[in-house]
Amino acid sequence: MSASPSSPSSIPFDWRAGYPSVRQPVFARNAVATSHPLAAQAGLRMLAAGGNAVDAAIATAAVMTLVEPCSNGLGSDAFCILWDGQQLHGLNASGTAPAGWSPAYFRGKYGADAKTPPARGWDAVTVPGAVAAWVTLSERFGKLPFADLLAPAIEVAERGYAVPVIVQQKWALATPVLCGFPGFAETFLPHGRAPDVGERFTMPGAARALKAIAATRGEAFYRGEIAAAAAAHAKQHGGVMTAADFASYRPEWVGTISAEYRGHRLHEIPPNGQGIAALIALSLLRRFDLASMDPDGPQAQHLQIEAMKLAFADTYRYVSDPSSMDVTPLQLLDEAYLAERAKLIDPSRAQDFGAGNPVKGGTIYLTAADERGMMVSFIQSNYMGFGSGVVVPEWGLSLQNRGHGFTLDEGHANVVAPGKRPFHTIIPAFLTDGDGQPRMSFGVMGGNMQPQGHLQTVSRMLDHRQSPQAACDAPRWRFNQGLSINVEATMRPVTIEALRARGHQIESIHDSYQDLGAGQFIWRLGDPAVEGYVCASDPRRDGLVAGW
Image 1 (tube, rainbow, N blue to C red):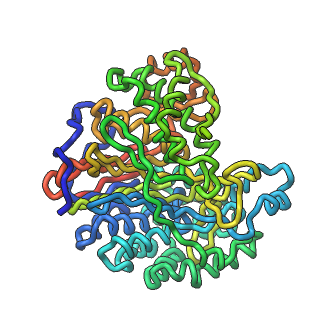
Image 2 (image 1 turned 90 degrees about the vertical axis):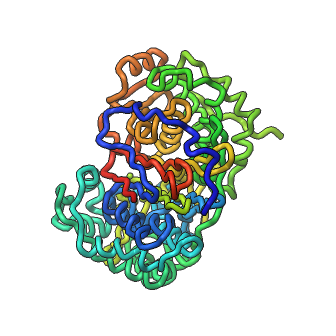
Image 3 (image 1 turned 120 degrees about the vertical axis):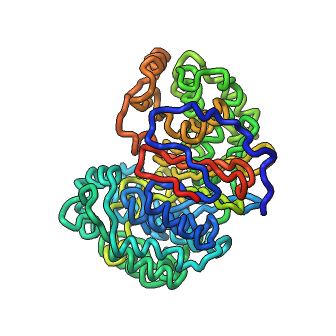
């Protein structure tokens, strides 16, 4: 049995602190949390069958490709942070650019004024990494046979499921935009329209693909018939992705980067992801006494917003594939540099920050934990709703559009190049305590909302002792650019007006699915075989914590 943290619960949460919600904290010794009940239950089936948290995470992720296709699919990318009972591991399974991509390729095709690869179509698709993540995690840490992990997903794909409320809304919104892309209507509009709420939806092509992936441990996807079909589809529809691009793909074990906050340490995947933005922002906020402030008042909200702006200014300037970054994560997290950046924050005025100079000289998230102490923080995504819009229909393979994350500016670190990974938005997170022991596996979905969600929920839990479910339920803000922010319509009117008085340009929004993210949280209370975990699932999606 793995060692327990130094105390059963290092943060004595105020369980009374809450917000209007349809959710309650869930206590269990084994748990899976994600944004669809069928997927969470698939993970729980693996735990009940003697599997561990990695087995549960893979089964959950596979089902999620079917039940929330607006956010992810078999053609997704993925990242993972996991605690194996002794130490943390980080896996980067984001996709790489095809060998045929270059700034010249895109400018020749889309014009000399093109700034980025397109947002949709085959020229937005990098080699998908999610299936490789499943295989790699299973080979190193799983207990159950790999084929067993995909059985629930195959069943869902063949028998179908009733489309839930929030997913249906996003499906319907994407339909006018994507209905003309190759394979999309054939796969996702079986009656010439998006399915209705409660209507049964099946994916026979995905069932076929999942069976081939299960039987070959992913070889069919990267070096077999699925890769060949994808390459042929790309050629037919104007792309340059080849079977060789698929065959050369490998995920990477990359560890984590981290920063201290209130006696704990937040861990993120290193670049090419944007997790470092959360670390920078929290490091700036260490210099302010947020614990003495009202968590829902304007002063705490303002300071967090300004810290996040500073973090994004550096993240957008410097973060890309590590091989092409001209600064390192250590330089961006240097304490002396951050101390100078923190001085730029004016407690009474909103500002539009530029990058500093540190050089001196739709996504789905899931988390699973078991009573032996293994904890998994896993995220996979198609990026924008339904990704590229491209589907290889005979295999149910909907493909991400992460290539749109590159720039064509040859002077920028994130410029497109063959075999390179683009700047990525999806980021799993993990929290350890002052003794280096595991405390929380968590994530918050939603584009650039993800580090902002990490910042806001961690501050609520560590500064204000709010429980994971309360921190999940609380109203959120989202920085966009310049002085522009969104705030959730449930935020206090007096707080909104006080933020406006500081110069923030505010739009209050009611649809929080895309704009304000959705989180899943598993907090370790002590020895998981005895005290177990407390878990939370975001009410902004159709999710569930399944535990026993």
